[in-house]
Length: 204
Image (cartoon, rainbow, N blue to C red; front, side, top):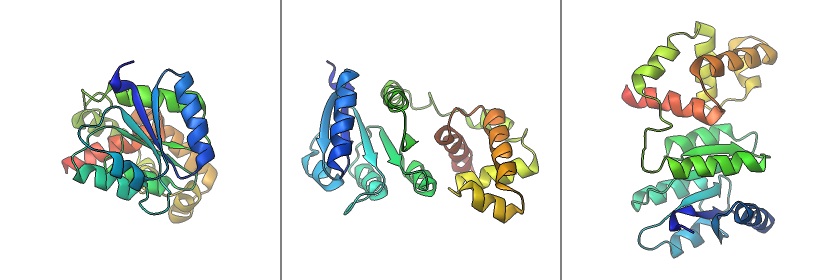
């Protein structure tokens, strides 16, 4: 077992920690469970290996503050943030703070395992899942004005209903635009789409 295949699960819910611990162990990862970000940071000395899976909503230090503190201490291991369905705005904020990926609960076991494997694989090649700025600009230029507005709403973390209200269109129309945006941008998930949008933003 390579030390690099270590997954740190940080969640204040003991049942979630146990079930994730079991799931990851059966997928052949070494797992360490932490009951809070505070506990993790207290135990985190020296170089950290592997990857972190953390909830975004936790008492004390939440997922966003956790990311900031990890960065402040110079830890570079990938962080995957788990969010509730209504927490996309928090997930987007987490990506801006350096999270590698986010996953909306409830999620399929395979989605989490794939996200962890992808994060582990891409550690040494930061650009692997970060499309180049020019390429993203090219894809953005294919979006209609309405699709750009929907994309901006998504990247701001707004739910479909709010985007629909702001643009004066129906939530169903937003869903159609959202599907078109994902397709034109070549995004496999909302987190992938957000990552691409952030690549462009960071170059401005």
